[in-house]
Amino acid sequence: MAPFHSPQPPPQDHNIDEAAAPADRYHGSQPSPPPPRRVNHTYRDFSRFEPAVVSSNRKLVSNFPSKLHMIVSNPEYAHVISWMPHGRAWKILSKDLLVSDVIPQYFGQTKYESFTRQL
Image (cartoon, rainbow, N blue to C red; front, top):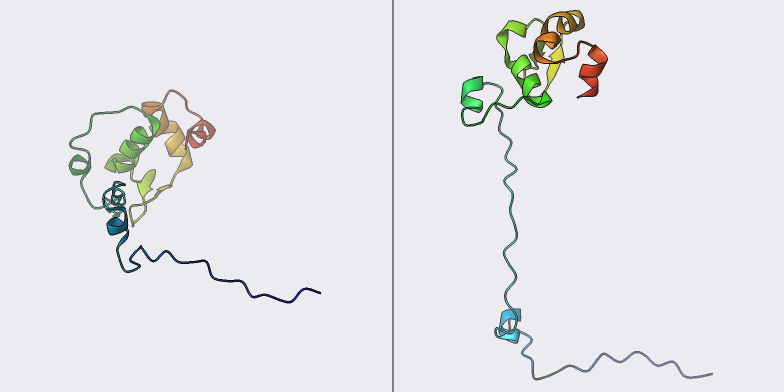
């Protein structure tokens, strides 16, 4: 049976100063890494702003989300569909009025199922 030998630590290169920073070790041979990208994830609550203030610089778009936002923000339809108090969600208050009065004015279809499918 062979005697047990403890592993030897790897030999150290005494030419490298261990206290030196990595940039000092390479002395310009490699470019420094770019700074980390930072994304601003600050939440902005626009629930208490007037629609004109929120979308003053944007062009009019007729896609489903923008139409839905116009409907929910319209005070005429507050009894049919409205924002929740915190402003981050909306609620349909009257499905029948939504289908009969609101959807035909903004969309080509009049079925509630088609409306919800686009959500």
